[in-house]
Length: 175
View (cartoon, helix red, strand yellow):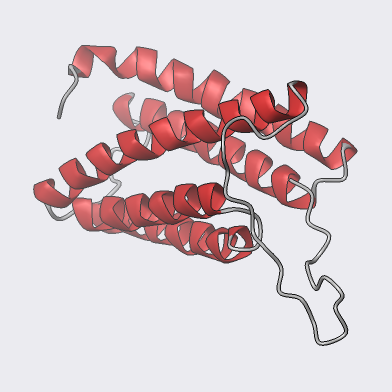
């Protein structure tokens, strides 16, 4: 890896509170704003980070000492499938959303393979860093564009096809 094992507790605390609790809370606020996709995605990823941090701490403490590569492979495959389904939905939101979710889906599948291959695990880590940068861009672009009331950083939104009657066929997706 590219980091020291001594950083594990720092990374897990960050995963639990920033990745987990903060995203889960964001998901609940997205429900209030009638953003069903945002609510589902944020609360789901928040639950992922909370569960992963709790699992790793318990595993390191010996509680799940009998966990096998197959257990983690199935865990990552399930998350990969779920994120792949989210990716289909993001194709109707924006290219930026689609790229992020497609990248994260690939990371999950690489992590599943990575339980059996060190090279795949390293590739997942590097792609995960790229996804992290993309997520920072996406989050900042949405925030900046909303606060400054314009399109200052592009998200490349989905352009709905126009029907024969000239009406916009775009679903009313709120992100």
